[in-house]
Image (cartoon, rainbow, N blue to C red; front, side, top):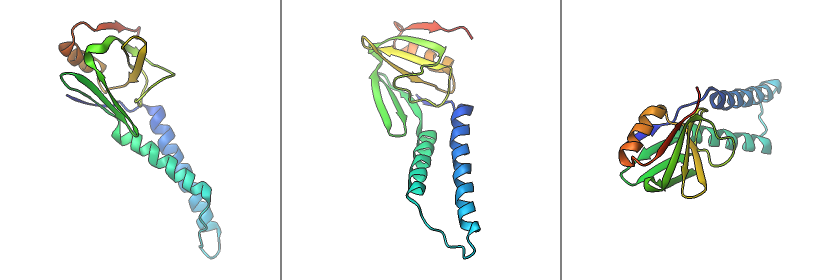
Length: 146
């Protein structure tokens, strides 16, 4: 089963804010010249690459459950986790360090293997937990205070 990622307002504000700021800078440089000649700066390339990365992450972040694996993708970050190796899922808490293929807060912290953990933010935490529990009923679910 496929799950889309919840898109948080902070991530959207950063992405579209940087896009708007970049367009303002470019417009100012183009229209402030009397001859309308635009000179490309190396900083323009850096900004364009950052915007491409942000939009790639925004458009490609998703999760998928199969019978054996949890697949995740967020831009260039992708991987899979064996569902049998998942020990615990903390619902409604955010992870501020580590692997986070997510776009929003109050998602799911998935603990697997002995010490590994990953943070994801599907559109519906409840549906995701329900479906993963159908595959592996032995996963410990911890609900954080909301």
